[in-house]
Image 1 (tube, helix red, strand yellow):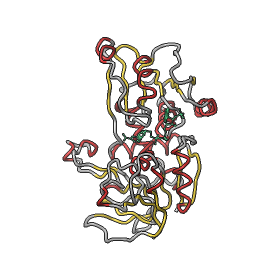
Image 2: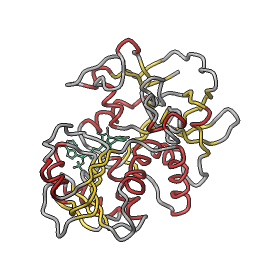
Image 3: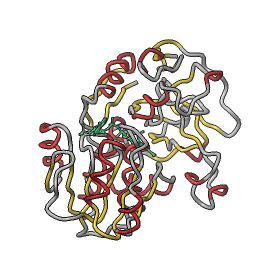
Image 4: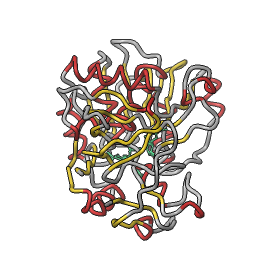
Length: 322
Ligand SMILES: NC(=O)c1ccc[n+]([C@@H]2O[C@H](COP(=O)([O-])OP(=O)(O)OC[C@H]3O[C@@H](n4cnc5c(N)ncnc54)[C@H](OP(=O)(O)O)[C@@H]3O)[C@@H](O)[C@H]2O)c1
């Protein structure tokens, strides 16, 4: 079957190890089911994999991709939950299972004609969502959902700053926080992406590092080193910085004096539970909120999508149709 694979690791040139071609189809592990993939969405995670983060060299080639929507063995339209974990081992939350992984880390991922997943990881796709829209939800959108509604502890009327407005997680956070009644401010390096963030519903857009009219209740941080110092300065005393990623680097100064003196909360967030994905699907169905899609490409042209993400030349999600 046609698949998009990691065949090697290269930190400086991640696309060097990317291969689009025929892959072998092993048998499904016991208790796992096959989903025929109709659409799959690209994440920074797939670029990290090509740099060797989370993958083992002796397990290559590995089919990439965390996100998919497709059709199960009974012909039902479904969405795939990307977190492979045991909720009991995580005291009710599979993202807290110490042995959890994401699809494409220890098991082949979704950039293929079909994918095997545990039966628990298959959820009904609302008919109102296209396969392309549904495929955007399990990673970037679920991550943003948990950051805004669970981990930030903000309430309607609170102000949230989203750093790096153009990204998959960031665009999701803008739309979801707005749908949830938060005032949304954003930063982006690009004037065009700041403009598009306003069109999406952001209340104000700023250059990176800009002084804001007032301090915010929470920061949604997925950029890392490039925006961290600004995030620490933008949040009100006692406010929260929710961090899910570090695209620009993971070792900024911790600025501990500022953290304790301002009583800041720095809260990590990763993916979301099956229950939160169900909530997100319902929210999209009920409110009309839809994922922001930058472009849809055939799976055979996946390299073009990877290159655009590597160049930072996207607004929203890159989706592959299968
Ligand atoms: N923990 C989790 O469960 C989880 C889940 C999903 C993603 N993540 C992580 O979250 C991060 C974002 O993922 P994504 O899929 O949203 O990626 P993406 O779509 O490529 O977005 C990255 C965004 O970062 C912003 N950025 C600002 N300054 C930057 C700089 N100096 N260098 C690079 N980017 C910069 C860019 O925004 P502007 O160009 O608008 O400034 C860009 O749009 C990644 O590190 C990813 O691994 C984590």
